[in-house]
Amino acid sequence: MPTYLSTQALEEIKQELTRRQKITRREIAEKIAGAKELGDLSENFEYQESKEEQGMNEARIAQLEGQIHDVVVIDAASGASQIGIGTMFIVECAGSKKTLTMVGSHEANPLEGKISNESPIGLAFLGAHAGDVVAVQTPSGSVEYRILELH
Image (cartoon, rainbow, N blue to C red):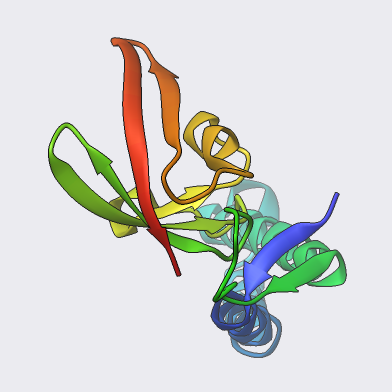
């Protein structure tokens, strides 16, 4: 399954991957070496903790490498006629205006107005045009959004 990311998000993932591979790995290896010097490894809390930290770091590295391998870079879809991944748009709901951007699920952050293409609200907006009214089902009932403009 592809990972949809903006150019900025891809760069942030690459930076995290590099940091984990070059810095965090070395720091953990030093902790493990220091813990080994303390003696009996079966009862050595520092050694066990460092090995666990190493496993979590390696799992995150594998996850980041997978995201980069399957990445589809999305750019802002300026001049778009319908909402798709990368489209910024303005909606009105209950008299208040919100600026939203459709992004991939790895980049979603509703507090910043970045909604996932896989979320219920994102799915409702996909393919919609300026002037459309989109109804989104929420636990408290249906909420209607009027799409004012696309950027």
